[in-house]
Length: 465
Image (cartoon, rainbow, N blue to C red):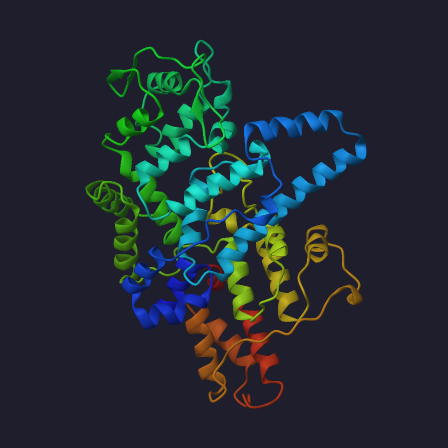
């Protein structure tokens, strides 16, 4: 696989960024990605959703007194907003000129997990998502402070139940275990005292605020430092600790390059991250430019986002419904805004179970045969029930190839674009599919190349980048 294709997949979900990487060079491509603009206006589907505590209270009161039809209408509106929310984000991933920002938002989304199923207020999830977007390439310490005081995180990790004299340790524990420094680098006393420092931090109109009647203003000892610490103080103290950089550099390497990052690289990049005062942009530049120079393809299993967006891009399917992509992701175990637990998606081998692999193959078969993907079809795949042929909608699909080539040059072209490695048996199979007498000028040549592409999508090597 050509490096420009490989890194387009790693940094931008599909092959769309390949030509930009080749034209600009990786460093200029990264700079333009960092400087890319994004829309900060509130999406229209949230216009009527509650945004303040008063509006939320009024909505809940209206539900209590509403009849069954009115309750159904309110529930339908909540479901609509949740669906539109996923479509809104997937559209950004698919259509942004430089989708690296959205890839980083997705990374942070899986690091600072806060699910809509638990939070329940779409506007708070949107605020959380926008904090990630605005700080995607910013400072890790500052991002941690903002997320810690977001309504979504406070609700998700039950800090509303954390009060002086009645402590809830959930947020304090995950701040250390999963968000910053990792297991083995703190004590239970740090968790307990951190929880006291977070007592009384509860939801507010523009983010979490301390409630005076339930906050704890006593002195607490945290990593050996004593004082009347609050949320920002905790983060400042955590980021003074020796092992703070390594959890996040390991996760960044895992998200972009290696399912099992070498520990020497985790330490190497972590030490640099500390030197750069936890600025994310220079860390990403160093990782991407240095790893780009290495031969490290095939070290990472494609996640469902990369799989489906690459599939649509290669088959030149532009009008697929983003809601359908959201359903596909959910069935593949990558439900946006709804990870199964606070640890987030495991990634790695969990993206290639036998069921996920079978569903990927079925999806590729369907699209390559020119049949549309929709919710009913995806449900059918899950249930294993055949659909009537008439229920499928036909779509036009094709795969780009050099019409001036021959069978071997076209096989090589697709291999360079799609596969990190080609075995002898795969090469023979491809030459049997696209035989020596293949005529690229023939009116049916497109169909033959799509069949070849479909074969490639089944290969183990295609699942890796």
